[in-house]
Amino acid sequence: MKKWILIIVGIILIGIIGIGIKINSDLNDVVEAFNSEHSLNEPNLIILSDSISPNKKYKYYEYQFDKGGLGYSRIFWSIIKNDKKENDLGKGLITQGFKIIGWNEKNELLLREWNPTSELKTVSELQNGTIINGMKINIVE
Image (cartoon, rainbow, N blue to C red; front, side):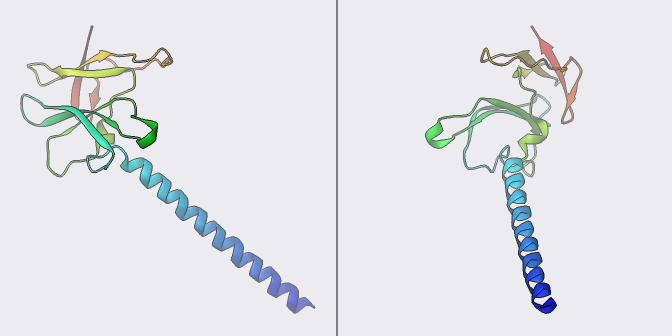
């Protein structure tokens, strides 16, 4: 009798371990998909505009995602190094509530406060001189 109980407990433990491994791999897939979304390699990425800094070291992108039948995502702005190997837009993602409007002669990124919807109530700590992905920003009125 004890032998059967041990066998049943063993099978249950193996099942629990298998389910745990499956859940862990599914979560890893979700994390990978979330992290890869803000990438130049993302198939649903729609680049609205881009611009290279005056010194040619950085490039910013204005983009959104095609969500299929759901329409389009909100607009995002990101600054990355102007390098063919660099494609992770998530590194230089601009804080929600601001948009990029261009460059100044000092190779600083110019931002403006931007509230596309009345639902956006977040207050950002972004200030002049903040460094985002190696680029100094300047907020204009």
